[in-house]
Image (cartoon, rainbow, N blue to C red; front, side, top):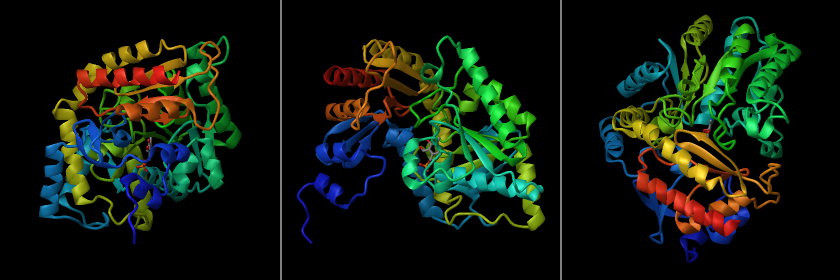
Amino acid sequence: MTQPQSWEARADEYSLYGFTDLPSVQKRGAVVLTHGEGPYVVDVNGRRYLDANSGLWNMVAGFDHKGLAEAAKAQYDRFPGYHAFFGRMSDQTVMLSEKLVEVSPFARGKVFYTNSGSEANDTMVKMLWFLHASEGKPQRRKILTRWNAYHGVTAVSASMTGKPYNEVFGLPLPGFIHLTCPHFWRYGEAGETEEQFTARLARELEEVIQREGADTIAGFFAEPVQGAGGVIPPSAGYFQAVLPILKKYDIPMIADEVITGFGRTGHTWGNQTYDFVPDAIISSKNLTAGLFPMGAVILGPELADRVQAAVEKIEEFPHGFTASGHPVGCAIALKAIDVVMNEGLAQNVVDLAPRFEAGLKRLAQNPNIGEYRGVGFMWALEAVRDKASKTPFEGHLSVSERIANTCTDLGLICRPLGQSIVLCPPFILTEAQMDEMFDKLEQALTRVF
Ligand code: PLP
């Protein structure tokens, strides 16, 4: 078989790209990478890019952390695999479960492992369906989420995701209900204060519960900060308004911390940053600092007891993945948690967050940037055609895509999401590297606008 000449052409020939703007990638070619150096990645042509996307939010310790690679190798050498978390598991898996409960907001709990965040959300939904059916309420199946939420790509987690693109798959499945996204800047009404907006969303939640019937609802899922929706922190007091309503109707609250877990918001969990305690946590991505595909469902004490009682009734929870609790993944996760918490990475997020905000505040003076928003090391700039009216740009190749492509040409990787440019660099970023990120972004904004 003949080999086309370039890596880019070969990538194009054999790849069915996901979540990729095809005209852009066809025009500029895929970026084919060979290795990384700290927060930089290097392509087959020797070009270096500062990755302000952390891979896909997950490479929080950068691309060449020796300790993480050594932890992986040590476990591959010692005991490379065991199957499925079916009553047999590695010592690493036991230690990681203990660690996850220890660092969680829960006094005690139970952990279930998956290979991804999507599967962890899927698993949690199945757990809730299983639990309610076991408690004599099989009709409690509806799932509440919000518009702009991102919970994954499996049929269930995509149904939870509040993005119109899922219509191409005929999703959401019935019974997945999306509430208003808590983005005050975009969805607040004329004359409404942020507090009034939050109160309106809380009222909407209660109305939906009453309309649908609390005894038909299985659970409520929310990211503490919506990530792939374009980095949307909740409106002021949002979780404090919503949680009592969920409690009143005995609806479990699940925090999807796939992005916000392990330091991204400046605390171990986003729920700490926004001061609430969920009933369960979904974790992935940062859990292994991106070095192993792994997800986890962490049940708090009440759900852990109820699910355990349901399992005991039929003597089995009929669910699990071949690689659930993979020893190498667990060894890497144990090391990753240690690295993030004890090697100064989480602290760096806290220390540099004000500089991050100040840099974006300056860039947001551009007349075509409507808003900058974020927390910790997850931020976004939102492009608008008209700042005063917040009117977005139209067109298939959105302006954010053009900004991101220009950044790539300049040696900076950032992510266009809707009309937003998202910045979520590795936690090891230095001040100088942060300034480099802003310089390149500023050049890109100047070229595009
Ligand atoms: N939940 C959230 C909040 C996410 O951001 C993502 C992925 O970006 C997922 C779930 C899905 O995780 P995965 O891509 O590992 O399936």
